[in-house]
Length: 257
Image 1 (cartoon, rainbow, N blue to C red):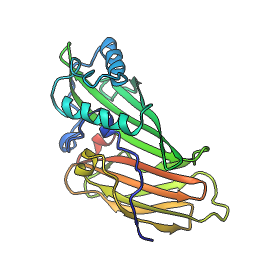
Image 2: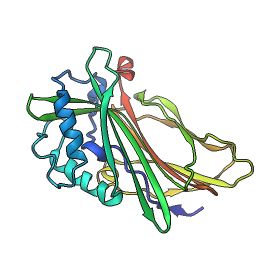
Image 3: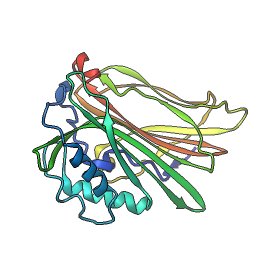
Image 4: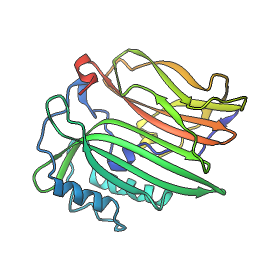
């Protein structure tokens, strides 16, 4: 099949801030720092959902993994694509050392060419604060799904959150319900940090799916960092676009921070 460039699901990286190559640097655990207060997190959620273009300015300060100007720009871009986008912040599971994490979720819809697309994206991260402003972040997990149709297709992203440098691992995306003779096509491609920063939709080759999904074995880079995968599934009942970030670490202990 020819290359396709659909409306794609933006990486959750664009929902909060810049994803630097060292979301977790050199395979080490995140640096422990003072966490934001509940009041700061509530203020951040309100600012993310504000119609003001400068709502985040008083809450954020540049620091490790966090560029306030870039974050505000990406928030505006996302609101342009999904005018009803809503962010939600909640407490996530603590790390092994007890450091708290935050789960950031965004949902939104968009009409394009007579089709409604529904975005669901989630990111788990640690935030650091100087007591007044949030001044750093470490991204631990992230995924996004963009689905069309009135009854969104159910799929499973069987992609690990973290792998070791040089490790071969499976990248599988599966329709939860049997195809029952339906003709489906799909493709998967790694996307670059530059494409993420530009919120660009990657081109990819689509091939017929015979087994109810995409099944691919890939190899992690030999240097710590991350890989982000973009997936497109085309089904008679709708389209599914997804992204998933995989942390690449050099220390086995960092697979579960």
